[in-house]
View 1: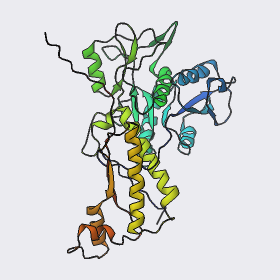
View 2: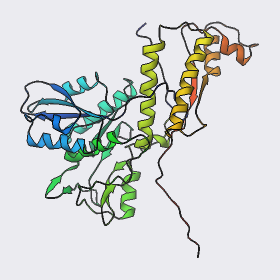
View 3: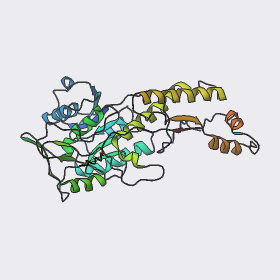
View 4: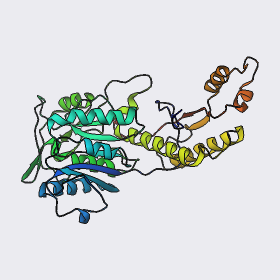
Length: 360
């Protein structure tokens, strides 16, 4: 029969959550000559960076901390490792939100993108990877590119140093991981960056519409043009919200929290009575109120309740005659070990587009 399943179906208008989760954990995968086998450590400050790592890898981690993530989980492989399989297997067993592999070679990017999509779609792990130049068309991948108008790869200039998109991915991932859920990456200024390939507004718009996270020089400073994922193809169950990094981070937090809380607190611990279902619903709605007060969710537009149509269908499947039952009777009916809930949630986006008419 397998393990009990908490099947939370995330759609654009149907998600559920219970208690506030932890966001802001960055995972960084490196290859370094100082290790002979996979090594994993958790860093909370720049001072924690191991001095045994190469100068390049130390700089990647310093760049990551510039974005103030809560913590950085570093997975280091031997420099001669043929691939990242061991690191990916390890990352599947720990908790983190945003990931990157600074310095990743072009031939490895597609494999990591496929793994990230599988983590979200089939393994119930709501993570995102910042990858250079990968048009994954999926919210699991943030497609970070540094290109000119002809989509030719360029460089990020920081003083006298230059970075490729692959090398600078740690800075971008750290920035995203460190942002509060009330703030979007859009227009975050990278104060250390002195230059990037210059684009016209039309050229930048085209790249953003293609699901590319780009850096934009506005004539004075360099900033993230818009905080987008690589998703460009929307569907009925995956709408435009999934194009926005800020909104995906909120949805990911909610998914992770509700799944962990139900597994740890409810499954196997409560009788599946109508009263206990109402307790679960009340807990979910109470959490929504907290998120509303924090302006993460749009106030008054978030509600969880029993999914009457789904429960009715289930009752029919086990031989219950529902033809004459009222909705209330269906809600109170015995559903064995199954719980059917539906939730409407509206995360708040950030202000990004302003239209101002000035009349004279």
